[in-house]
Amino acid sequence: MKFDAQDCLIAEKKQLTQTIFDFRLKNAALAEMTKPGQFAHLLVPGKTLRRPISVCDVQGDIIRLVFEVRGEGTRILSEMKEGSTLNMICPLGNGFDIPLDKKIAFIGGGIGVPPMLYSTRKAGEGSIVINGFRDKSAVILTEDFKKTGCRLIEATDNGSYGIHGFVTDALKEVIDEIDTICACGPTPMLRNIAAMAKEHGKECFVSLEQRMACGVGACLGCAVAVNRPDGSFTYKHVCKDGPVFRAEEVKW
Image 1 (cartoon, helix red, strand yellow):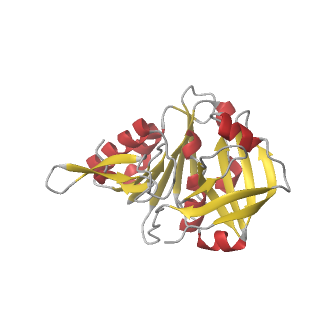
Image 2: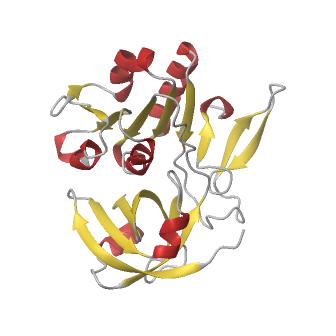
């Protein structure tokens, strides 16, 4: 596969919370190629290493990225202006294959919520979405998910919005209604979801969060342990082989 870096216009920029930003980047060619669950690698001004950001949504010639400021690189990124250009490699990684003949639960936790939006839209009406946040101040994209026609369940750790509890608490209530689970979020959350899916005999796919440098499988910095059929394990790379894996493949 050839990886081309292209300049994209920042067509729109919004601040969703104190630390979360919403960029809409215009590039028709890249938008047409991008699938749910893939990510972009962004060149931040003044930085050598690119920053990986999951694709939140694609509509027409617009690729939407929703990201959280977690360090100097994402802080610089958040300060870029509408009308400027951002150099991007996209799409990267293997995303979700959405089974349209099955009832799917899409589950996002924290900044793992944005990449579930495009997946939900692709699945069409009737999906169940469970999104979990720290508290009410961290809740994002509620109206966007509602527009997809999904059944939306939101939860907060402290009960300040939606259900008081974790996404797994909400999943327990609907797991008998679904065939497949697609999830993105912190590793402890994904581990618990994978365990529930195994217990109930549900197909489960997880999008792993991992620090990475090159984004194309060259530096090998984002290795994750995966199970082999014989009970041993080996390593795959989140950027190239993932970020989406079958839950039972991951060595939790």
